[in-house]
Figure 1: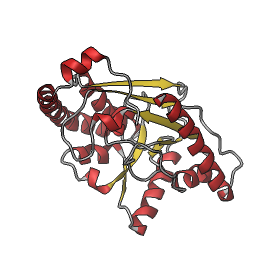
Figure 2 (figure 1 turned 30 degrees about the vertical axis):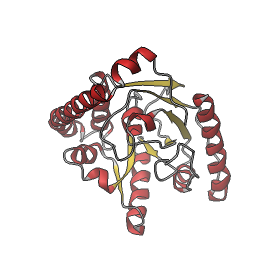
Figure 3 (figure 1 turned 90 degrees about the vertical axis):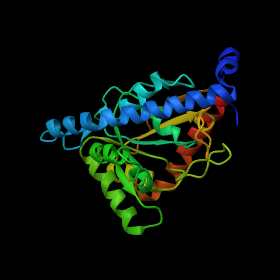
Length: 260
C-alpha cells in the first residue's frame, strides 16, 4: 500500500501520538456538532423542496456538504478532487468506486454534484446520521437478505428515474490489504437496465486516514479522481460480465498510476 505524499514537516508536527490523539478527539467532537446543526437544516430544505424535487436532490446535496465543512476543521486530513468535470449534474450516472475505508464516503462527498448512496443498514442506525441519510434519499441494504437486495435495486432504479445519480461500491466491502477486489454485477446490471453511463471514481489514501478498528485519525492526504464516463448504450444483460471486467481494469490501472 503506497501512501499519498504528506510533507515531512506536517507529519512531524501532527503525526506523533499526542497530537493525533488530541486532534482526533477534536475532529470527532466537531463532526458531532456539525451533524446536530445539519439535521434541522436538511429537514427544512426537504420540506421546502419536496413538492418539486421528488428525487431529493437538494436535501442530499446539502447533507454531503457536511463532509466538506468537517474537513475544514480537521488538520489531520487533506482531501483533493481531480479528473473530469460533470457538465450536467442532473444527468443520472451509475457511479462506482474502489472502497478503501469508511472515509471514502467523506472524501467522495467533496464532489460538487449529488448522488444517492447504497449503504448497509448499520450506517443508517448511527444516531442522527441515519436521519440525514433517510432525508437525503439514500438507499438501505441488508447484506445477504434477498428481499432487501431487491428493494435496494428498486431504490436505485427509482433515483435514476428521477434524474439523480446513484453511488455503489462494486467490491461490496472495503479492502483489507489495499488490493482491488473483484467487482460484483449489481451496479452494471442497473446501468444497463437504465442505459445509464457508468461513472468510475478512484480513491487513494483513505485507508491510511482511519484504519479499521481504530478511532484515532492519521495524517493523510487523500484524493478522489473522476474518470471518463463509460456508455452502456445498446448493451444488454448478456454484456454485464464484459462491462464489469472492463470497468474494473480501468479503475485498477488508474489506481496503480495514482499510487506510483
